[in-house]
Length: 635
Image (tube, rainbow, N blue to C red; front, side, top):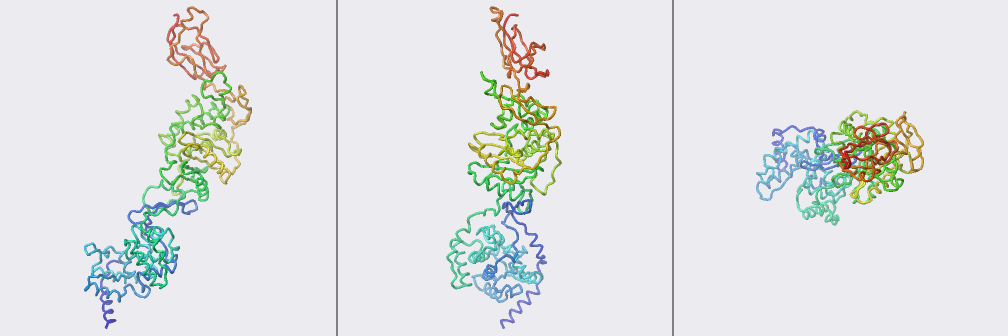
């Protein structure tokens, strides 16, 4: 009699219309979008990921074949013991539950995995809020019919696989992959039986209190084996609600942070995974308080490594110091024009009695202080305006927006002279290179940098050094680098880091031919300021080598808009006012109100009352400085 009743129920259910056509398994599998954004390296290996869930947290689809059999048996024991025997509906449990729910206040469920899967696919079968959060009897009938349809179109393995990937286990954790990582920091294939038991009981009650989850999981384990050990469950359930899980991959996380948008994205990059991990390993040896960040690009301006502290903001995403990029380009263009070179002598300020103490070559300054602290004086003024215009054409009106764009400029100035916008995404089309400096000038400019370990191809230059931190650039083989660190002694930290990288694979020295038009010459210095040496220069545009560039000279006396007192000439006919230039170069020329009045670094002038315009000219006649002043004295 009981079998006839079950057969009648099955016949009635089979005669009901299907609520919706069952979609192909492949549509469901391929259409499930992970709520992660992933960054892959140049070999398509995952480097970093971020969880950006819209509602539920989902990871990539987990194939059934990757799950261990003991875990699957545990899940089936909890949810559907006869899953591989029935055809979608467990009629024995279905009728018993139907009868109990009609006549008892204790409600009982009898949904098979196939029925639950059908409910996930059709929103019309979801439990109704106006029915106590449960399905109505009509929904149950429709769910049973949909389960039969699902079994007719999908294999048992496909149903089980889809169920484990679509089910919500706890909170926002949807799918076996997100549940395994979010609750146990494991991949699904690594789950043990105790962890599988917890996941199994969560399927029926995702939001149950931890203590109840522990009790139910223990009962499930002892159904499987009477002597099962429930001791590990207590520590496992204690972490059920510990918050959002950390990402599984964190290399180049700061680069991934530059990706906008929600989950479901996989961003292919040019990053060299091996170099990235080696770089992050080196940064791991530096105290966290230093907040050290490094970007490395190759000669094609493709980012090969990008490491920054996990705590935001990313130091490399900050705008570089004002005017730094313009001054770098201005110096490179001054090298091209021949107005300054590595052997040009520079001084901080007009010295006192001993000029030899304070004079150093440009190379000497670059070896001892940061680029921003080199006393260029007026040497770069003529190039700054045009340099800003060039930068506006390649990097934007305000110059480089962040460290990557600054690194692109540095790479062009120390490479072949072509600006290439740094690229790190392989799914973006790179812009065409733009020439900002001839190759000959780039070659000479690069060889002004300080050598690392004596290797000609490995060079570095501190750009800024301050109590709050340091910024430095380096050229290592075929790579360019920009690094930032915070705190006192940051420059020493960066130099040690660059030295370590130079000793590795990126510091290998390729053969680099000398560009046409570049010559080497011996340099001797005025006042024996430095030892004679060989320097590179552009043929025919050799900057003043070993000498002070005339363009650096300035009028020291009289001061601008000053009033000089020449009344002493009334009692002392030999009294004179001195015009003083610094540095006191012999070839300098003086012009007063348009008339040349003398030459040299110092000039004595007989004062007369009036207003004057005094000009200082270089030997070629170009004006290097001018002042206006007033004089008291006889008319």
